[in-house]
Image (cartoon, rainbow over all chains, first blue to last red; front, side, top):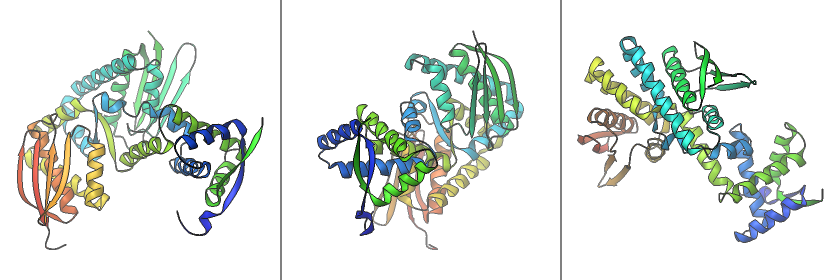
Length: 193
Length: 185
């Protein structure tokens, strides 16, 4: 950003210890505190545009590469839906099994890689790349209720994703007690094995 | 807790102040932002790097790309190819590519998207040479069928960006396409 107006400054109150830490970090990078704070605030406003807090973004950063390493790939939604539509009628059960096994493998990968694999899996579902708008989790001592909502997903793809989730959570030590899948809403009740 | 004054660029300070008014106090919000910046530095990253990566994920989502287990995608493609037939499948991929060509609207942007999105592609480049765009795409993961369809996707995208296919060499895992500027563009 340039222009006369953008050079004007404003003073903001901040905790003294944090300002000292930032000053040291800025100096170690050869920057002034002012330019360093400018960078930080720019990123904070960017995060806000993404409808996330910086904390949420940092929390999910460590799982960003999981899909790549765990053998999942991106594909255009229209292509995937077409492929499912053309194969589900005759191979529905086989496809569900395939997704279940892919989920199991995914769960094993997370188990090997993360200290809290179940929580990591939930974060991965929540961060948006599975075409879900909403992932809600309710935990009680005996069961976990998982509700995934998507406004884009076909019934067939929702069923396949449900199987994938079931496979993954099975590898993470949970079994399905109840399940329901209706028009883009997947509900699973899980319990520890 | 001791406090200090921090100088910030006016426009940014106003934005931060505006956002904080929806979340709580300005002081708490700034506190949280600075804590996260320090947290990022402690794990050896800048906030910009973290945000860039997260932005890329959002961009993929906005463009309609979704995740699928790789093996399943390749198997589904083979099954549908046998069931639906070559021409329909080629047309589907070509038209989808066209959509993405229009979506990105620029060759460089499309190239960048392919590089960041299709991580099963080990090499992807588009070079300009004597008014010809030379596209190379390599992947050891692609079957012959998938390679053929992916080449149609690329062809569709470049067609939408104003390039006509002039020469094509496609074999399992290897796509070499040459394009010239369309006359009507």
